[in-house]
Image 1 (tube, rainbow, N blue to C red):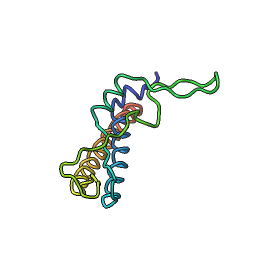
Image 2 (cartoon, rainbow, N blue to C red; image 1 turned 90 degrees about the horizontal axis):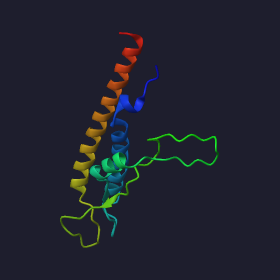
Image 3 (cartoon, helix red, strand yellow; image 1 turned 180 degrees about the vertical axis):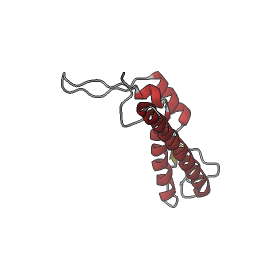
Image 4 (cartoon, rainbow, N blue to C red; image 1 turned 135 degrees about the vertical axis):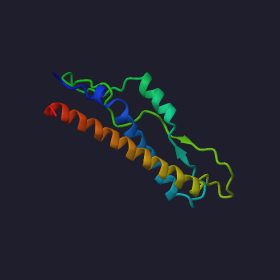
Length: 132
């Protein structure tokens, strides 16, 4: 009997991918907090979730022997959105360093939580395979 990892892991691999890409964006925002005219960007979880539920991701097949793997892909398929600043900066920068740090820490905690859930799922599968 084959194990279907999509059913076994659920949405958690997508959540990890989302948290990873969001961490990169938030780190970029923090790194450019003093860059004039830099615009802060972020990913919207609801948009990513809608995209994941409504669309099937396809690989580019260049040979007739290539297989299509549903759900595979390296990108979430959702473009980052520019954040609307609560207070305008004189140099055009829209990064609020304190808010970015809070979002980065929150995202890191969510990433660790999702990673732990995936680890627990694999532990459960491993125990089931071994018959423990």
